[in-house]
Image (cartoon, rainbow, N blue to C red; front, side, top):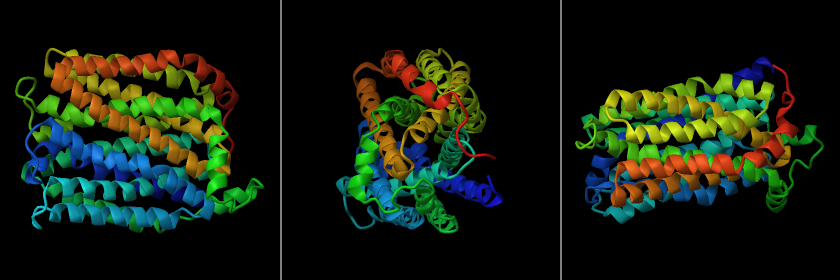
Length: 409
């Protein structure tokens, strides 16, 4: 990996981090923010506020990726997505002043999500375009995701205690900065296609066809779905769980700091665990990490006192860091380089569907059966997927994880 590669990697990590910060800034203050935006108090309004954005993620992620593959360029699309997302945050803050109701808020969230997912997914794809090892590059992406979520949850909680719209204003500024930074990164998409002998402009339909012709991608897609389902569950139910007077009664700042107990180890361990998966293969990090992840998730929901729950949140982050970069690296390992944008877009579709399911299952199960049953359901689903897909991971991973990925540091 050249010095230019390292510089681009650092800038791309910063872009992914900024997008995550902007998104998670809102989470700790969602209970109060949705009320200020015209919704009734309660978990249902918070659920739909989050669902609207992730529904757009699901709808548009593959389109952004395939468009970048077909154009042979990613940087302009990342810039447009980030700056458009910043504008949507500004519009969100303006909705109450203009007298519109909560349905208009949800529409703004859909538009903003359709733009932000382009910046997020394509910035990760640009990390895939770099050399130096797929596990290491996806570890860098995971570091950005985890650290961005950690910073966003802590800062967002503190800002929410000052006022419900402060996280929204901050999110707009951070996204705008991400767009400006992305404009300084070299675009590698077209060059990568030329080096591999592929048509540098294969066309939108051909890109999608190449991605669909890789059935092994369904393995990392399935794990990406259930892993992000759990993350979505914590983003919604976890915030209400830790703030509920009947459980731990934390403030928004306290809830944000508790989420950071998960996100900080999740971030800091991504790069070493990603490099580890380059050396030992993807099988053990993906399967064992997912099994442990499900067990400790259940533990958080049955913890009798806050210190125990807080300690288990740290373990959730460690287990997530073990499996996340290996799962994303499988996508890079398996797919044709000319279809990387579409493949990562599809991975993010499954991930966003996981977030959506986490919101819906978490919110629904909590409302119907309480927090403990909701944690049991989500953790149990993580365990079930890991055990059911164990043979499939074993079949795919040895081919791609038995030797280090191409590229040298």
